Structure formats: C-alpha cells, structure tokens
Image 1: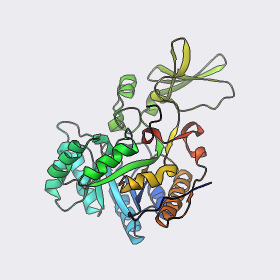
Image 2: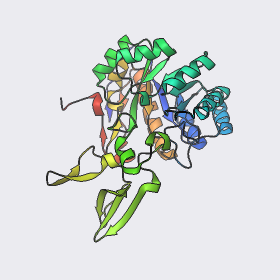
Image 3: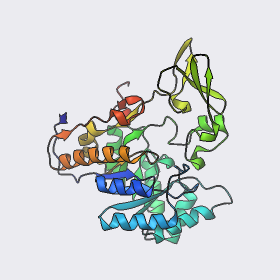
Length: 337
C-alpha cells in the first residue's frame, strides 16, 4: 500500500532509532538510522532493564562504529537524580562526552545546568521525561540552558506541534512508532503505587520481581505487586502485566479502563509531521529485539526517503510488531474531540 506525498522543500526529518545493546546499535545503523539513542547500564537511564544497555567501553566502541558510518549517537541520561546522590549522573555525563556522543538527552534541571556549565560545547537535548509541551516551557529551557532540541510528549495534535515548532527557537523531535504511555511520559504513579518502585529509576513499568502468574481454575491470572491485572482463559495468548493496559471490573463490565494494548505508528502522517516543522522522528523500543529494530527502521527509512524524493510513501504492514497487533496515530489525530 502507498500514500501520495504532498511534496515539500523542507529538509527530510532525521530518523532516531533505539539501541538497547551494542548489537542493536549495529542493527539500527545498518538498517538506515540517521542517529541512535542509548544509555548506560545504571539508573541514569530510564530504560535500565537487566541485560540491556552499555558500559563505558561499549559506548566508546558503539560511537566509533556509528561515526564511521555517518550515524550520530545520542546518550539518554534522562532520569531524575536522587537528592544527595548526583555523582553517578555527573559521571555519566563525563563518560558520554568523553565517548564523543553527539548529544545528551537530559530531563533533570539540576543535571542540565551542571552539564551546560561543565561542557559548554556539548549539544544538549531535552528528554520527553521533562514533559515540556508549551512554548513558554520550551523557551525557558532554550534560553536558560541552551537546549538545542526538545522531544515532545505524546499528547499533542499535529496542529499543536506545528504551533510549537513555529515559535520554538530549537529543533522539535516527536515519537513516530512504538509504545504509548498514559502517564506523564514514564513517570507512572500507578506502577509506583502497585510496586513501591520508581519506574523512572528501574527502567520498567512492571519490574519482573513484582510480576506473578497463577493458575486459578481455567484462568491464568497475571498480577503486579499483588494486584490482578488480567485473566487469560486456557489457550489464549498471555501478555506481560502492565497496569495501565490491564482489564478491570468497572460499571459491571470487565474492560481496559486506562488504555487498550496498541502502538503508535505515524508512517501514514509523515507528510503532515514534516509540514508541521518536525526535525526528527523517534522510534521507541530500546527493550525490543533486533528483528523489531530491523523491520521498523527499514520501514521508516524507506518512507522518509520516498517523502524526500516526493514519491509515493510505502505503508508497510507493521502490526505484527505492535502491542495487541493494533496501531494508532494517538493524539496526533484526536478524532474523539
């Protein structure tokens, strides 16, 4: 299936791709990423999953590999430092700069200020975790800290993004594919309540240590922190229990109360995003495998190349890589309004 491009003299949007491991970084580079984003194997990184991420030596090697192929590396130090324990975050900034990272993705005000003063020539991006979604907020970060790019929260329409991009004195990056979050971009109060753990520090909405499955009659029951998230009849596919995508009893009905399992896919609205002034598109999924990366990066690379050449946009079938095999353009098109 194809979509006709409207044609534009604007610069083609940059494709920013996840790299949860050194192998994933290489996969993203080979599949056509313009830049990859990754993080250290510690709590400075909002995707601090066991078995994922980079140590200092791996980051240096990854940056060298990407740069040799003309691809940028952005390092996500996008958590909020614990009071009285900022050294680990400052050390991570130092290591990323030493590795020649092209930009640091930051959210914590104190860390942004420290990084700007310690490394005034280092390019800084504002993480989506900062939840800056208005022109005055973005102007504050740009004027105070020299932020060069802002990653917008996934709650804005294309028209709202356009208004921000036209008034903001920095580049605008938006999410293009992957998981959605009903909370303030990863700061999940539901998860914190259920588990007593910070998803910001532990890198996951549902820590494996708090997940249990139990057979009850004909149902397999999935729980998080002792709370029942879903029941799966025998023979039905069993999902990982994420609280916001759980099914609960409400008004005598069992339903997805907060959010149904679905994923963002913006390939069909790329011309609108480019016209809105978006500079970069981000694919979500540092926790996903190489097959996911290869397929999504290639699909978006082909679409962006077609958009730049004013050809018809390919619309590949990516539902097999989405949650619940369902896709949406999310808030970019708020059809319920």
